[in-house]
Length: 110
Image (tube, rainbow, N blue to C red; front, side):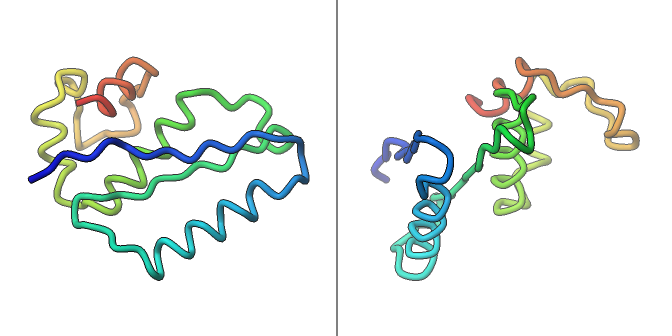
């Protein structure tokens, strides 16, 4: 199996320039015509400083992890077992677990 480098599309520009419209169009095109392998996952996050001025890197990571786990439903249990940051995860009360930036980052890089 050949390893592929992550491919990232990062758009930055002034409000109303069409970044979200372009990204949505690209995502639709990839989903309709793309030759995606089983290992590929398309993850995205739309920033909106007017609606969510307190956005942080943790918001991005949470969104990416959530999207990835929704696409790969069988991975969550393996993730909990292999990620040392999740050692104290209690599935009976998940709302009590604090996902700090450090824990989210460890989940992403593991």
